Image 1 (cartoon, one colour):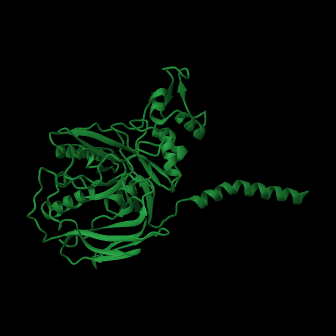
Image 2 (cartoon, one colour):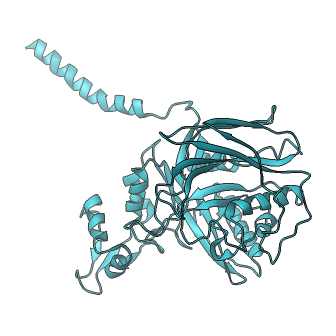
Image 3 (cartoon, helix red, strand yellow):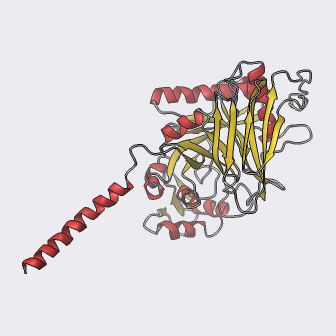
Length: 428
């Protein structure tokens, strides 16, 4: 009998200790290695003009390899009480949108009021603080509160995304596009100082409405981030006959900043700007993201790394390494290859002694010399490096895959990755 008692006692001890052992195995390491975290920081839900519930959107990103997601609805945070007409939800997302929501999270989670089929039938939109526990996982997936500050100035749209914001900021506008950018930037900085939390502010889709020129991007030197790629098909990423594409805007703006304004360059992010989750067309998911190198998956560490430029933007290409050696002034990168893909690596920059005679016409930024943002070197394969000669204002790399984008936002779109400009500090 005593033998059986000892066995039962040992079994009970193991059962009690087992959860603690599991927790110990899942604990955050004391000194975790640097790694890349994948995230999207421009996303819309039913809280503004998206067509799905935020929990469903978060679930899509969580199950598709993302590590963080910022909800960024227009001029509103997902907080407080909000009910939405069932008919309005169906008009946006389709007849089965609520059924999908209920199937995933259960009838006990989905809150409704009013008689089904009546005009008073409503569904409650859950705020972030209520649903984040259902989708977040320590060291795997993180939700961040964001806002798209959607403004207008001089009749043009000026949209900026604030990531890790605490309180909604209503757009402040201005007499000019530049004033609107500056005013909203200051409002975000004031909140960051007042609340003691880091907030990342970036300028959205500059070619949307052909609103923002390269000169505008350059002039507000306090703003350091903008979308070099936005997955919405209506933002004129490639420009038109009279307006440059967004990458060209980037090079012109950074040349102006470094050559004439003695200011730090812009860093480029890629985003989905997703609105549509129930169809294959429109502003859908999985088009653009950022890869941020950090030890910890927290808003503070992610934003710190982004502000240091320790990230790259992607629409499909994955980089294993991006490194700039300040002593040798060498930018090195290595690609994580995808089967059957061929890669073209271009190092792009502007020389200090470039042609400055070409002037912009009608604010369209398309008359600048080809020496602005020129290809300084080109390579194939999965590894490449560029050693700065010392006469460059900056150098950045763009990697283009031979494989098409799996969910393109424009015709013949390839998979790409964009590194941040380097060399501008060490070659002054």
